[in-house]
Image (tube, rainbow, N blue to C red; front, side, top):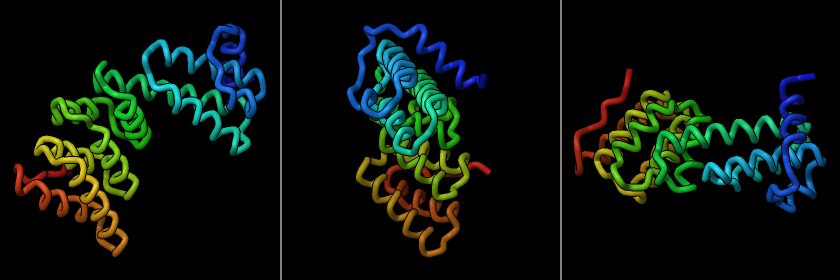
Length: 203
């Protein structure tokens, strides 16, 4: 029996009927998978983590025709990423921030760098910064460079609308053939000239 299958079985055995169940899971998953997923969701709820992304992940797996153990493993990994995200951002992090940080971890951002970004932003929400960071990485900007740029943008107090415009401009530049690192660095430098020192990306 595979590790994923053993995990599913163990979760199914320890789960109790008291776990809150999403009717969509009941409709889309076989019973052992549903019980295992609900166990993970219940644990996340007790840890004050967002639960909707976990349900969505399970439904996504079902829509793709994935087997039960694979769905359970994916939901469990997402729960772990969200737990790491919350520890990095602090107990006051919102659900949106935790979801965005979990996506950044999935993209390769370290927990340490998440904490750097949190510190750079002060008390301001970092949902948009995290979304921009994940997007830059998805556009082939190296992780150290993308992280350094977004941390500098956060330190400079760049507001969400300007971050969204920066994101669109970088995508547009890359779409026209610009080097991803050059596009992101140039756009970021221009954005912070009014509010702080120019970003210096990592080598």
